[in-house]
Image 1: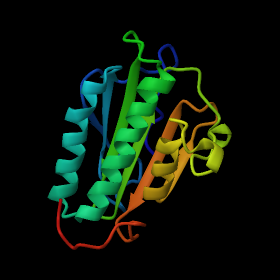
Image 2 (image 1 turned 180 degrees about the vertical axis):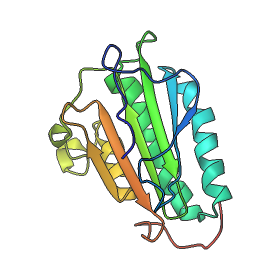
Image 3 (image 1 turned 135 degrees about the vertical axis):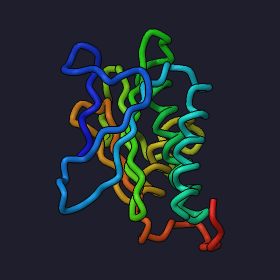
Length: 177
């Protein structure tokens, strides 16, 4: 498990520059390292982190379908953290941690907001919600990732995409990202 992404004033803070933290799996099993970043609450800050994640996927030979799924979920999680969690408050930050190995992609995104209850997000596919501009991001993350788990207080999301799993709704192209 990656280190928890603490909020300000709770435990050790995450450095403002990317760092890599080894997993505690021990010598029997070599795991990829966690990369941690702290992003300002500014939508333009997403692109550089996204570029790094996609470059790592490409370096490991992930297919175009997995790159699309991870990119979509990654963007949605960060946008939700900035817009809904931090309410676009420039004094707040978003903490990001990711680990990419040949068999899976793991992402964690934490905001400094009040949190939310994901089960209370309206289903955007129900007729009365079709015109509402909320809930689609959570639905897309759940659709394209294999695991989407929220912290108890709703300020952190953990997502996993396994390489062995097909991407639902995306034709298998075999092309690389």
